[in-house]
Image (cartoon, rainbow, N blue to C red):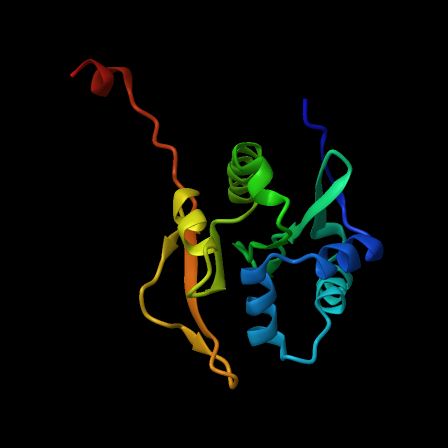
Amino acid sequence: MVEIKVRIATREDCFEVGRRLRADDYIELRYMHGSESDPGWVLELCRLSVPRETFCLSFDGHRAAIFGCPESQPGIGVPWLMGTDDLPRFRFTFHSLAKKAVVYWQGNFNYLSNLVWKDSGSVRWLKSLGFEVEEEVSFETGSGGKFVRFSKTKEEKKCVTSQQHMS
């Protein structure tokens, strides 16, 4: 059985995951933060900006991802994740955990939204989690990185009266 842990991320977690980023996440960070930025430092700066909302996911003691969903404005969460090549080895477990995280975040926010590199394999994964991914490029970096917006609106639960249920 796989040992799964999710905990508040540390500096060491950020640098370990940063050293072992999967290719798509490495490219995305390079486009967004510049080619000279060390991925570990980028993750560490994210952690320092919202330390209680930045988490480390590990499988069998191996750090697999750093992620979070800080609030950008009241009611709006910004989900993000940077992972290693360990994630595909635990794809079903990881997908199940990701779905639970989205449900948790939707309990805290009315709207979830962020940008993703348009050529990333993460686009398909985000769609499988119920996010809408825009087709048009929302943001282009000076180095040519093209990003699209993904978002998810909180689903309102509707109460059905017994009379409506019977019809």
